[in-house]
Length: 299
Image 1 (cartoon, rainbow, N blue to C red):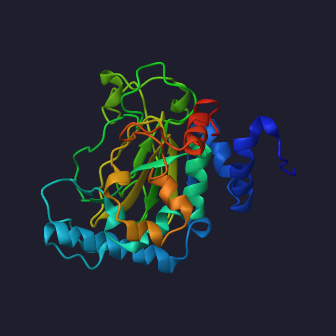
Image 2: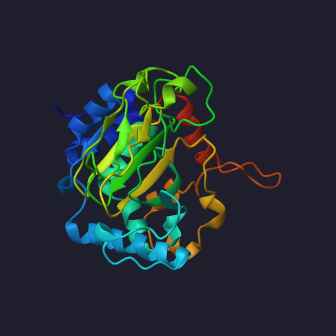
Image 3: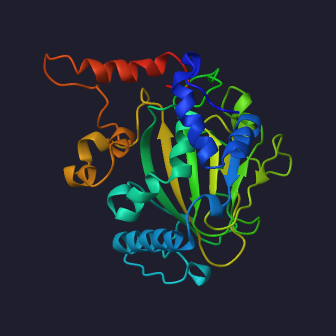
């Protein structure tokens, strides 16, 4: 149907047009029904861009650990940890700036967390072959007491830089759990136990896919059984009133903002009116824009 300028959905109309433009209607239906979705590589980015992301993450890993990795398929991350995690990747390479504004990433983040969505952090993981479990069931909705609201206050967009299969240590998801309205109890979290009361499914996806889930969705991670490394990027997004992991407003160099479109600064919270210094109230237009995010889940 033709999306109009309907006043009652003023904040949704623009976002939904982007959903249609990027052919993501099936993905938002899956998000609403099951709490997660997989966007295939052909709707995300060309192989050349995928290769740039892989190299940028491996280079960041080498700068941090001193371990050079040429081919993840037959390598280890060089640490004793099951997963080597690299936080705050946005400032590491320009390709991560481009990835943040990827149409599929940007559209689904705004669909889940509203037009005023902000980036909480961008991190990357290199996961070793290891029989030990890594992440038990949890939600990304940290700090919110139950009952959790039905709309997403945070969301996770995971860019699979290597193939996700049952043997490769994929993410574990409990379909439909975004509707439970609570986090897993301790006895429910260990989904790999033989007598586990909650069973999760492995999310399989080709390299280059996006695996996206609602902040309320119960998820964890299966052990990697096959040799080599599983690589991913994780974009954590939040509503503008949530406390973010990273203070991009304070730490982002001006030249990085100057070389990107205005939406980039919005995503980093640079244009958010709060907190403000001194006795002068923030710009009224900024306040009005962000305060509206408390009026409906699309703002």
